[in-house]
Image 1 (tube, rainbow, N blue to C red):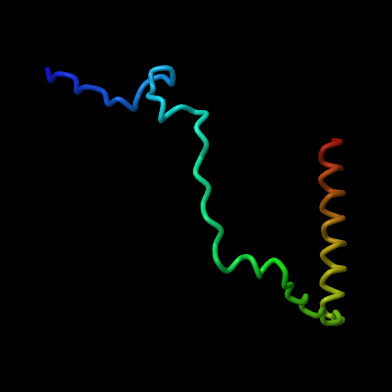
Image 2 (cartoon, one colour; image 1 turned 30 degrees about the vertical axis):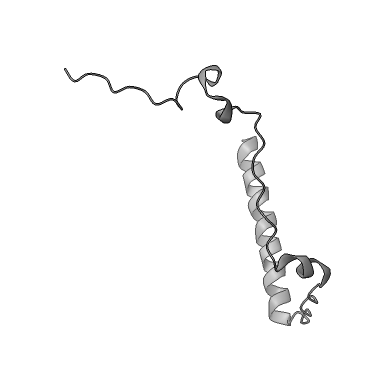
Length: 80
């Protein structure tokens, strides 16, 4: 049988870990990206909404009616 390989010093329970691997050591913060300071101040204007066409309004109404009927069918199926 092959002999076991020795475990590295970074594996094992936390109480056996070296101090560098302690869970309370603070994590290193990444530096702030150079282009992000000015981006927060300037806001891009929201795109203008186009008025809904009749076909869009009909499509939305039909979807609402279909959804309502589907939910009604589901409730009826659960009751019986």
